[in-house]
Image (cartoon, rainbow, N blue to C red):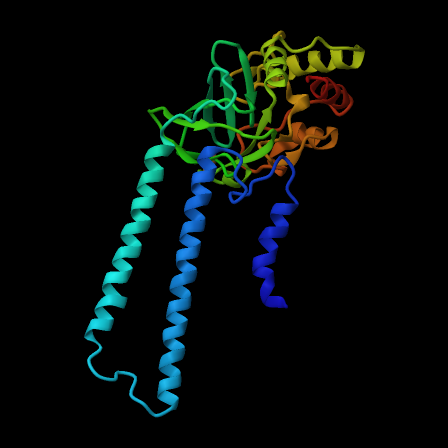
Length: 329
Ligand code: CUA
């Protein structure tokens, strides 16, 4: 029936997403598990309250139908218990449960497999995520790789306005606040791609400020880190070589870094491994040669308001630039 669509549409929309899953009720880590536990607690309390209210309502309707008075005798005791004492107990109880979880969410989770905790620095920008692995030189954007079973300390700061870091299946929201560094912890208990998003309205493209957490077995993660910390691979053929030349000449290099080349701009995302990313523009478009070409020519059509101006890459050179960028993995 038509009335089901408001319920079904969001479900279908979520089912259609690429770049990882984001079901807060399918937790894959201790932080998200606590939040899901709270959700179910509130859900079942609501079910009980709902049933009690409907039962009383039905009882009152039936009694009235039979001609009896609804307020038979002194109802003061009943009103005090059902209207004051019971709500007080329920609200204080759920508040206490929330406070207890809030406290424990600040603690680092225990290491499941024993490896040392990992630290990742995440900087929020309008509208993308800069990701740095301190002490390694590895820099990515909108993509955070972590080893499975290892507590990961995420240090959050912002380059401009307020943002909020949220991975529904792994951890609760944590705000990014100008002038300070907030810390949160992630531990993924199973490998997978987990969708993350900005959960604080931060301007026109707030909706296109997504990222993915890639939880990998430790050896895979170690190999990824070594590969990502190394300079970008040299152009493998003449087209890619020409693409790099154009990239360095037309102005891309003044905003973007590709490690190992003359491009060392600091304004936009590091592109040293752009070819392996799950999306372009923090979820604005899939990472395909076609959308990459569209993005370079005029990213404002894909993500209006973003900081990148249209690039004067001649149409004849565009395929070489795309081939080069796609080869960076
Ligand atoms: Cu960043 Cu919303």
